[in-house]
Each structure stands twice: as C-alpha cells, then as structure tokens.
Amino acid sequence: MAPEPIYVPVLKGKEGEFAALEALTPDIHARLMPLIEVPDVPYDYANDRPSKSLDDHVAGVADRLLRCCHDLPLYIDLPWFQEEDLADGRVALEAILADCANKGLKVLPVISRRSSAKYLAAAGAHAQTGGLGLCVRLLVEDFEEDVDIDSEIKRLLGVCGANENSSDLVIDLEDLGSEASHAVLVARSVFSMIKGHDSWRRIVLAAASFPEDLREVNPERISTLPRREWELWKTLQKRPKLLPRPDIIFGDYAISHPEPTELDPRTMRMSASIRYTTQENWLVVKGRNVRQYGFDQYFDLCKALIKRAEFFGENYSWGDQYIALCAVGQTGPGNATTWRKVGTNHHLTVIVRQIASRRDEL
Image (cartoon, rainbow, N blue to C red; front, side, top):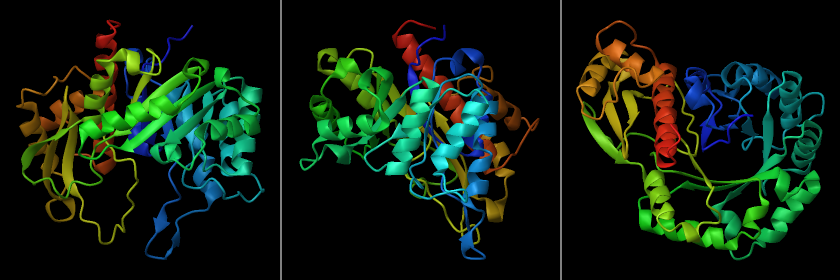
C-alpha cells in the first residue's frame, strides 16, 4: 500500500516542473502528491494569435504526466480554460481525464466555485468511474461574507455525485504578501468557517510567497527571500488544537508565484538566476539579462552558490548535483527550463525532508 502524501506542491504544467518531478529520488517521489495546473495556450505574439489550438495543447498532457508521475496519485486543474470546448465538443478536462485513464494514471480532478457545468460534469464522471474521488479547491475570496461556503461545497459535491469522505479539500491562500502575522489570522479564520473537518479524506493548506518576478532583486549578488508559507505552517503547528485536524497537509507553489506570467519574448529581458531553497528562506543568485550576457553566466553563479554555507551538497538531490557539476564546467550552462528543473527538484526534496523530519519519518 502506497504511503499517504505529506506534501502537495502546486506546479505549473510546464517542462521544467515535469522534468523536476521526473528526476526525484524514489523516496521523495513517493511522499508528495502534486497539484498540476495545466497552463493556458501559449501566445504567438509575432502573429497576434494563440500558438496552437486547444486540442493540440492538451493532447500530450497525459503522456507527459505518465513519464514524470508513473503511479503517483496527482491532482489536475485547468484554471485558465475551464469553459472552452475542443473541436469534438468535449470540455478540455474531459479529454485529459480520458487520456489519463487510458494510461492508468491516478488522477483526481480539481473543482472550484469557478468551474463550469460541463467541467463539473466531466470531473464527477471521472471521479465515479475511476474510484479515486476528486478535490475541491477553495481560495480566500471564497470565504467572503456574501458567500455561503458550506452551501457552495455541498453544491459542488452534489453536482459531481461525490461526498467529503471520497474527496480532498485544498484551502489555497495563494500569495501571502509581506505580513506573516496577517496570514496566520486569515488561515485560522478560514479554518473556523469549514464545517465537518473530519469528514474530508484529506485537507491541504497551500500558500505562496515567492515574488512574481525578480526585478527588485539586485544582480550580481546573492539575495535572501523569506519563505513565508513555511513560516506560517510552523506557526500554525505550534497551536495544533486550532488546526482543523492534526493530519492537515502542507502545500506550496515551490519556486513560483501563483499567477503565471507570460511575456512577449521579443521584448522580454530575462536575467540569469538560480532559485535555491534553504531551511527557512530562498537564496536568489542573480546575474544579468541573458540576451546581452548569455547563459554562460550560470557557470559563475553556480561557483558562487556552492561556496555558501547553505548549499546542501552535490549528493542532496539531482538539482544540487547539476549545480555542483555546472560550477566546475562539467555540465551546463542550460537554459531557463533547465534552471526551473534544477530549482524545483531541489525545492521538492527539501520540503519533503523537512516535513518528514518533523514527523520523524525519514
């Protein structure tokens, strides 16, 4: 029997994140349950139109999930195009879930108050035939005074023919901002508004604090950014009686901001950077824009990083090994996707081991 997950990373369904999952060691891979957000169709700015059809965009999702997740249970969400239909009239979620089922993937569809009727129907049908249930995802805005959240939860589950016992609940605080104390108050307020805590199969608390971009981070130096979602989690754990239940699961957005950023590549000025998770913070090792200074900057960025006391060592994860080899010129310099893979792979490893060590499991 597979162990219960102890960590739910919310990941953008892009190659860097997929590759990071694929490169995890088996012990880390087995303890997480990723929530994959299928991104919107990329835009062709030169021709002022989507770069591909929605059909083509979702066609390869199941194959990529199979390569990186294998038999690992996962959540899948399509927050950016829930109401758009494919050429055959199906909603995109239905096609992805059918492909996943055919490949034997253990996928739980994510539903929310923003889900369309067709989206909910597809999620409900898959949950009932697949036997894995589904996931309800709630945002802070769902707990506003004019929302009867208990009725809304019952509506969502009822439309899908599901109940709490066969469903997971993700409470997503998204970007916490700069006030950690305010985040604690918000989390506890949200907890108090959820009825029947023990009825849900799992409850996940997810949050994020990595900035939307690194424009405020100075180049050619190593900066430290606080991991406020981890600070929030530790604070909440100090008063366990105020938690909805003791087995609530930690979730974050890894090394990303919740809102995806898509820029015109013709005008984008991306800087070389390494996002490196430490026990309490992130180190950001930032260079200059790659269009002018190239990707070879990464050799020196890696040299600077491995000299830091916070570097975990080349044997810690695949990402750490890549950094160490790049520092001596034995691999790299890679590209933006490579470094998203490196940073995410290292981050997932750190979080699983942090949580497990608090539970004395690894």
